[in-house]
Image (cartoon, rainbow, N blue to C red; front, side, top):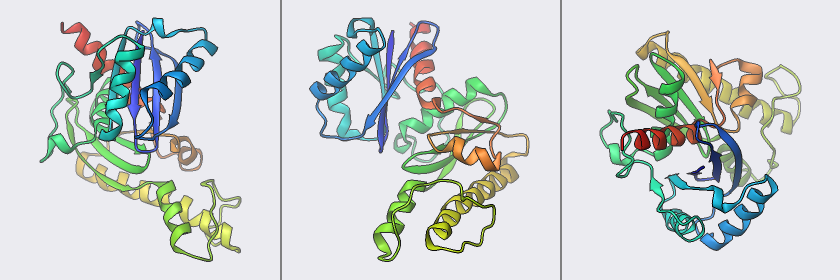
Length: 261
């Protein structure tokens, strides 16, 4: 089996992928660049055994990371505990296999390139991929699968943390739909919920509309990340929600490399 690892700024996501490319199990842990390979191994070993697997079931490891300092320990994890040399997404022998039509291809986050690969397998034609993470990213994937560019906005939780940290009178709140549909709140918490939730819905709607004005109205919208279902619940903004888009892209990247041997 393949162990796919998506190392994001907030969480590291692990997935067991079977021979057909299906994700059979998935886990996540908070990102910590100082976490050692030994710590990862103890945590993963317990989770694998709870689901009836063992480290011996893992035959290959592929990693995508946007946290360069965390990569070394993940590489040691693969070598020491899974007895395999990990593949790093975007590096030989698993180059992207798609065109990156941006000014600085090497600066593009690995997750965004991997998402483009997964999106191309899901939908024909032009795609808009929205990823909800530490940042909220909006990406255009062309009909031929090329990454065409995109934009970056502060993530929802990042915005909430900044609001709490910078405003002495405002409490820390979680992101959730307001209890009532009105956008005029009557108390502080309600006003914050309205501002963050409907404010982001408006951001998403506005960005989709502007991107479609450039790309064409036929572009399909694919959303990923933990908050995607929350916004879809009230806004019906996306053509499809794919929580495991990055991990699926890693699986495809590995499969394409294996097929090309």
